[in-house]
Amino acid sequence: MLKRRKTIFVGLAVIVAVLAIAAAAAGPLMSRVEEPDYKVTMTDGAIEIRSYGPMIAAEAEVKGEREAAINEGFRLIAAYIFGANKPNAKIAMTAPVQQQSSQKIAMTAPVTQQTAGDSWTVRFIMPSNWTLETLPVPNDTRVTLKPVPAKRMLLIRFSGSASGSLIQTKTDLLRRYASDKMLATVGEPLLAFYNPPWTLPYFRRNEIMLELAAGG
Image 1 (cartoon, rainbow, N blue to C red):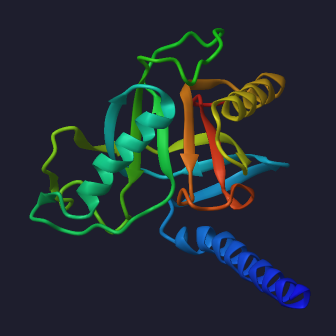
Image 2: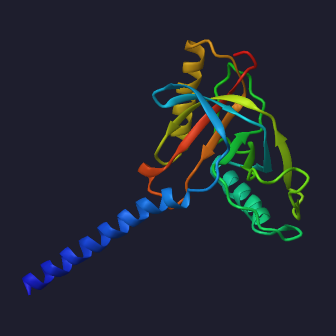
Image 3: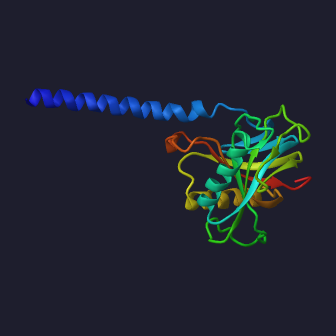
């Protein structure tokens, strides 16, 4: 009986290990979708400077705490790309999902990521084969299509669950780096999440970006 129980335990352990490996692999595999085209012009550990060309974004403005806001914004834009548009066209999924505070905060003030009542812009960048003229019109007026001009971004890349405290820590680190290197930035931090929610934290790709001022 003891030997049988040991065999069952070992069998269950193997199954759990296989499921864990499958879950780990699923995140990266499911994230192999089109991403915005960019050129890396500087790398310093986990920090980069990238040059992005013009893009088109489908975005929604959502009020509330950060995690609830990105879930609601994702739902609205996902509905649009899956056919809630005229004429019910399907648009390929892209990565990352982007989120940015719509609040205007002085550059010297601390950034609070999870204060109730915040307004957040959640966006998907549209696949490069679409133009503003050819993209279908959203059925939901809360979803809008906007051109995004070319820009240079200073960013930090990290893994793990993007909790409010981790985002704040990485944002502070990125701001200190910009200050130390005398890089002028504009606007609010842009959060970028590349993986499905079931991806194991260790395998997740998250980024926080700051737009560099012209000539910065």
